Length: 83
Length: 93
Image 1: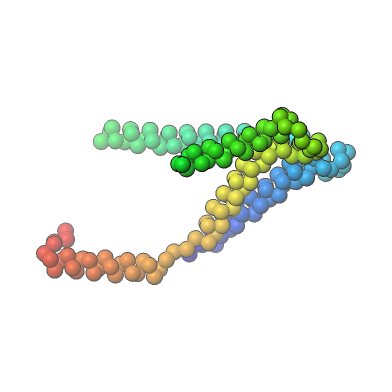
Image 2 (image 1 turned 60 degrees about the horizontal axis):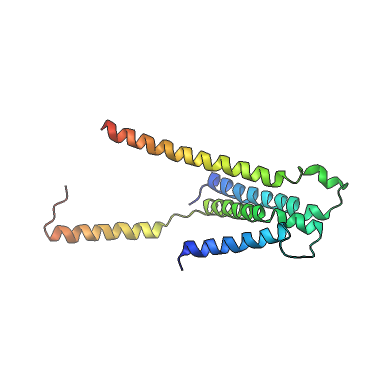
């Protein structure tokens, strides 16, 4: 069975994704229809960042996965050679 | 048609439609606000997919199950197989 901490982490991930999705939807889909001088614009970065931030995050995440994978493969190779 | 081709076709169609709308290759009556929405649409799709993936992983982590009945059954079957093989003269080290 999933332990208490598993459940907390899992539900935390679900909540985080729901939060990100809601915020991003409001940012990209709803905000263009709100007047430019409305107060809600205070809580959102300028529009180009809606593309820049996910792109940067994606590149960083992919390179982290790639370098981790490369590191593990390299270690495996070294171990085999040492034997 | 292979899966790769299907995906390429789908992505190509979507990107083509998107490009037509963003660069005004076809006459449309979109308001500037809708133009803004269309402009981020591909990134929005990607973000939706990312959020869906994260939520799925989280949900599966939270409701992860172990199958005690299946484990018992498997152990039983291993025992059975061992006995059967021992009868046929196989020696277990």
